[in-house]
Image (tube, rainbow, N blue to C red; front, side, top):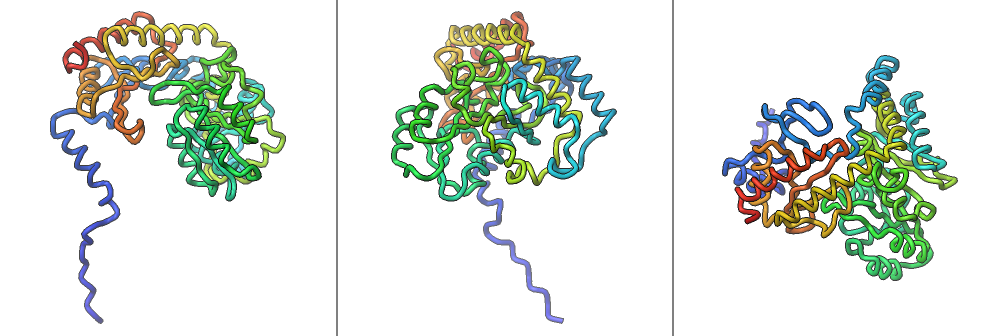
Length: 410
């Protein structure tokens, strides 16, 4: 038998491309700061309170916009479905994975959005991944905002369409780029109602008008708009009056609905064929019945949540105004959504500010590139309809103390 060849470690392996990031993280943690991306919730006691490292902490970074996670009716619906249908389906929606709660959840979505069709995915990420990659194929075009969410970009990557980006929220650049494309191929313009990093909203009437002028279909992601924009809480596209001109609305259950999952709603007469051709829908297990039961109950309650929406907007205006008065640099000049971004100079300042807030009893998200625009480091606050007015004042006091301690404000 010949001797086995000696194993030689390659100079570079498949992890080598991450070496710079690994070194950056190790250098940061060596300074004694905590890892902003490794937080564990020891216990969650309400939509706005948790215990982190043994300390009572106000939650201001959870996307739990409407505070539905502890709603008694929502929790009861999940428990009932768990008892009646078990813990999971173990199958795809097109095989054995469609239970009565899945159909009821899609019915709740049709009621909420006033559409003919609704399709539930296992995550919001998969909803964008599946719908975008399936709609636009080889020889067709996807036109998207440069600041689009990762799930939108990944949906583009999964498909074979040509990808065209336009400058963030620029109607003129969208018009110009659409005008350069050949007229014959199909086109899909992908927009977001609320952009999750800075909390700014899209000028949908102008953008949708431009898309239609050039013969493109329009998809709007309302992940961060569902629940509190518009008379019925459908999102920015309802608030801005373009419901009849938007072809597809994608959303998630992991924000205002308070659970997990994703969806797409539409009035297109051929939409149901997506259940047969959309790979991230066909080739994955469906959501547990208990999850879609909680989602259906939550969605139906959001249809009558006008008081909660009004309170959330009061919270957003107070926090935005208070932080601005303290001297913080914010992502938007005025409050545009339930997301308020506090802009910091660099990663070190962002981490120190984040840690000072956490030690003071407040959890927010720290965000950095590539999740944010190049060179932008920020703390992202996401308000909840269950935050009391008193909690908002407490939060402002925490920001003032941390900002002064770190040197972000005078």
